[in-house]
Length: 80
Image (tube, rainbow, N blue to C red; front, side, top):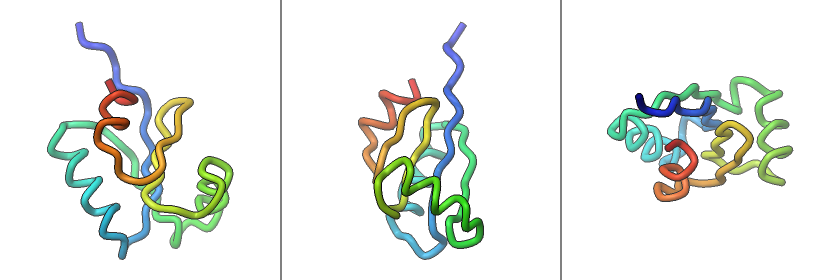
């Protein structure tokens, strides 16, 4: 039985090219995730600063881990 993927929240902005690339990659890999647009949800921008130290997208909150920017290798390791 495969291990369950940890919950993944992707903090993005609609105009962010890296965000679109990352989400397309996540879809291609079959990962489940929740997208939060930090420009539509102001408190989400505060969460990104808590996680990453500054506003940068995409920021991935995966279980207890934070991955800043689109890093496929780091995402594979965190998502299993």
